[in-house]
Image 1 (cartoon, helix red, strand yellow):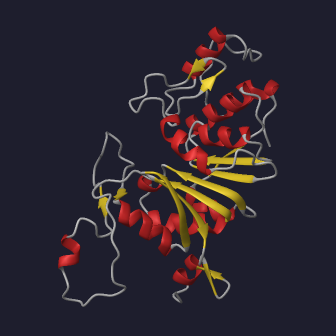
Image 2 (cartoon, rainbow, N blue to C red):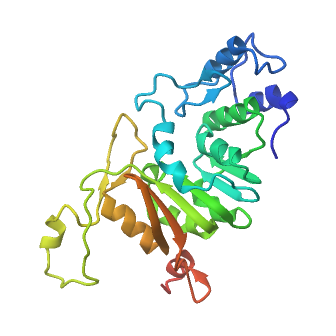
Length: 278
C-alpha cells in the first residue's frame, strides 16, 4: 500500500500538491531540496524531523506533538513487532511514524484532509517507512476490515460534530488498546457519582466536576471545527459509556483503554442504539 519513492511526484500531483522547480526525483538527503518540498506541501501541524529538516519549527504549542508523545510513549511497548496499528486523524503522520519505528508490522493512517495526507505520505517516504495512508472519515472507520492491536484516536474528538457517534464506531476497531487524546477544558477533577438521581435533583449540574462538554457555536482558537470540548469527567465517562476500561492516564489529556463491554449479546453498542434495542 505504501507508495514507491519513484511515484512520489505522481502521488502529490494526484492530491493537489503544488508544482515547482523542485519537482523531479526525490532527494531526501539534500536538506535544501527537502526544506523546499516541506514548504510547498503547505503549513504543517505536526513538527517532524525529516533528516534534519523541521516541518513546523515555530508551532504555537512548541515541539508538537512530541511534547505530548514524550509522556505517552513510555506506556506503549518499545517492541511492536507483529502489531497492526490504526491511526485515526493521522494529520502529518507523527504517531503513525512513531508506531512504525517501534516495529509495527502494519500501520494504517486515515484522515479527511488532502493536505495532511500529502504531508504524511511525503514524511514517511523521506524516512523510508512503509505506512498506508487513506482518505477516510472517522464516521466510516467501522468499514475498515478487521481489528487492530493499537488504535490511536488523538486530537480528533473535539473536532467532531457527532463525537459519541464516532467514538462508538472507533471502539469497534480495537482488539488490543485504544490510545485516546482530546483537548479538555473546565474542571480536571473527578469524583464518584451515583448511578441515578431524582428528576428534581439539579445541584449536581452546578458541580464543575460533573461530566459535561462545552459546545462551541462559532470558533475557538480561530478554528471552526472545534465543536465539543469535554471536561475530564466527561471524557472518561464517554470512554466508559462506549464500553472501554481505562487502564492508564499517562498525561492530562490522554487515556489508554482496553475493551470491556463494547458488545452486548454479540452486538456492538452502536448497533443496539441504532436499532432501538440498547
